[in-house]
Image 1 (cartoon, protein in one colour):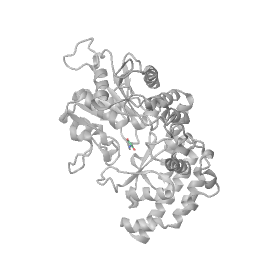
Image 2: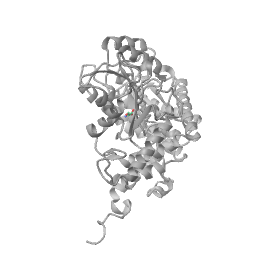
Image 3: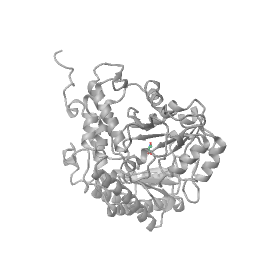
Image 4: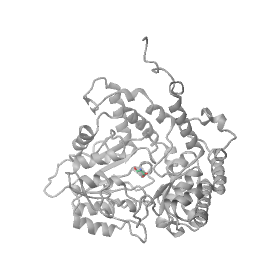
Length: 485
Ligand code: DSN
């Protein structure tokens, strides 16, 4: 055989029509639908270009300047650039904060923090999943089944939101923390529509003798743009994913304090001049304790995203993300629906469907059938994750396509139509899922809604790829998705 292996220099469309076709179909799905999953976003072409680069070929275990493999001179440049942009994006002084940009994503980042700072079976406290927390913050079910590795390897006691207000009950959290004495308190969530009181959390952590970790994954873009309260002033460690409101590639980061400890942060027995010991512990936990080679293509793509996190356009985008979340929340409330906490401070609303007698999984299914993507979500008091009482609606992705408040009000109208159809099908076919599924799948009103949704979505631009260059664009053009059903 001469030259490189047969597919070495081919285009994907020629080398593997099957995979190429599926990716094209996914592009069509993203372009023609309304994307409301609060943790998703549409990243940019330059980020995708860096992700698809030759950096995926390289092993670089270790840290810049201290690798276990040769040939890393350019990889070191990329990782150092990414780290300095990350600190810059959050206005952090490199003398007092460091960052590890190697975590593959958010869950590994959180487990690296636990591995670094806790011993097996140490105690932790995080927001309960049905209160809007995240699995990796220590979730176990009401009957004690340990769901997350965090609850398997550590002793976790959740704190909760007040069932009446939907707001975090900081008094109760303090009372439980002083009894439980966790080694770490975790703040941050996946479905909490309000800002966090980091000062209060810091005071509680100080009293209880706990580290304070903020997992800012959902709001990391808002934090960068100063459109949310700032966790760095109060927390010891801040972890995040990078593909949500930050609009980067799928990856994770861990920020940690370094240098001399301020007097107010010293623990009993520590003397002036004592320094933080997080840096080595975090770096060691990420590699070699948990991960292997860093994903250099992700790190490069993250560096690209972080460059834009400093721009006025990014600030304007984050402001619009919040304005859009307020607009859709207000619209849905004006139509008689209940939003948990009666509104939002951030990029999402949590919709309580219990007053309608509808479960979130039914709305999710109906929305899927009409090209609106959102997710069922537990609201406080729920026990079933598969048929919970709510749905989560987020604005980062569609705001990246240029939608403003009036557009989100229109989306509110679409969602209202979807709920009404769900309820009509419950009337005609009954509540039992298999009967209801049959009814919803053949519902003609839902097909009309699908048509309107596609017409609406395709009137907006799409970042990340050129829709006109889609292989099936001409096939699609003039023949809306809804009509193919
Ligand atoms: N799975 C993400 C979410 O949807 O919130 C969190 O990691």
